[in-house]
Image (cartoon, rainbow, N blue to C red; front, side, top):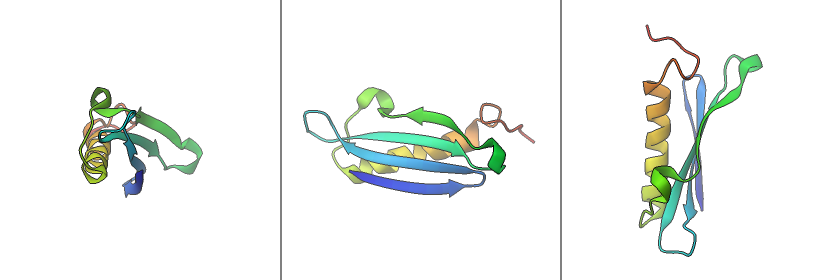
Length: 86
């Protein structure tokens, strides 16, 4: 198992690479939380078995995909996350 936290503006990305059920690789998971303002902290996205449970050969590959997905969510879906595009 590998986990990583990353702040992206007002959001925190929690990314993980977990051993796949029955072995043979790693699955990726990602959670995105809105961190600001403090009184509005909440989870805005969760996918604990990305791409339908796709298995990556290494934990580094799975973790990289989880971080990438989290960043796409933060940057690409402002309305869903409670922000408005400028």
